Amino acid sequence: MKLVIFDCDGVLVNSEAILIPAELKFLKNAGLAYERRQYMKDFTGMPYDAWQLKLAAEAEKRLGEPLAEDFFEALNDYIREQFETGLSVISGVRETILSLGINRCVASSTGNEGLHWKLGHTGLADLFTDAVFSGDMVSRGKPEPDLFLHAAKAMDVKPQNCLVVEDSCNGVLAGKAAGMVVVGFSGGDHCLDDHEADLMQAGADRVIDNFANLKPTIAQLI
Image (cartoon, rainbow, N blue to C red; front, side, top):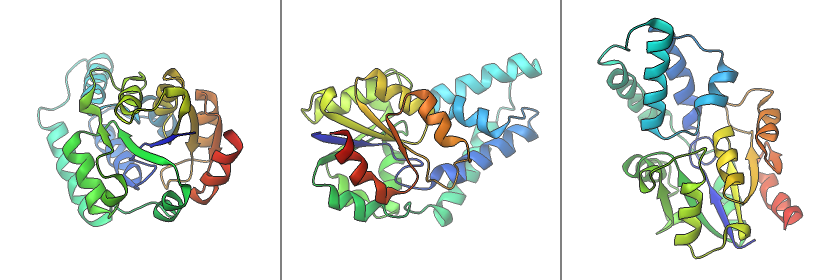
């Protein structure tokens, strides 16, 4: 294995633990209630624009009318406030990454500005100098393989020599579609008891619930 590709949200930082409850709360207030497990399977890991379009279509279908004009703006304002005070690194990330001894990069559906802000805000930016790939660098986001293939090409590594670490089903699907080994991560605060099963069903080669298990898991998969 020559390259480890990390997702960001829910893998490196605890953003999904902030995002998902906020999104479900705002959607329920708008009349779009979702069961959390199904929402996570269907929506997490998607690029922001695709997520917006999918929710807008759901509103038209289920409510017969669009979401309020200020819905996404109000939600984003609320999330930004929560990120300022609550965004943190997932336990064991820095120590584990430094111990791997393998080239690494980040490939996240988040836009470039937001991705760099998260890495900087949590003190992880120094681990991924010149190796940060955002969703707005490709035309098709997860679950399509484009972002992971773009990252591998930029890092000059063949897809079959890459390992992806992902917490979302859409991300796992993208990694497998790219022809890469995928380790699912179910250790985030946002993960439910059945998250491991969902990641395995999506095609993950292994699932870990603690970052300390990543290095031995990679050794088993090489």
